Length: 94
Image (cartoon, rainbow, N blue to C red; front, side, top):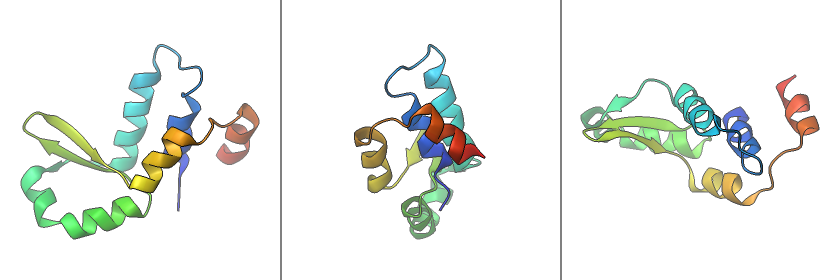
């Protein structure tokens, strides 16, 4: 399971630069792929849920904007785990 997107999101927790919000959004959108229309997302809910629980976010486009479906474990990991050190980031990106 590729969790690079989680590493990027977590890396901004302790000292977020001004562009952190845009970078986090871009990372999740890149990992989630092309946003699905709500009707298509409803039709494919089981597949999308399986994908999200496998560690890959899913982006769904609704009338009022984009929604992101991620696994509860991923959310808890991002929020609760300490941010990675620079050495960890460098080691994982090699």
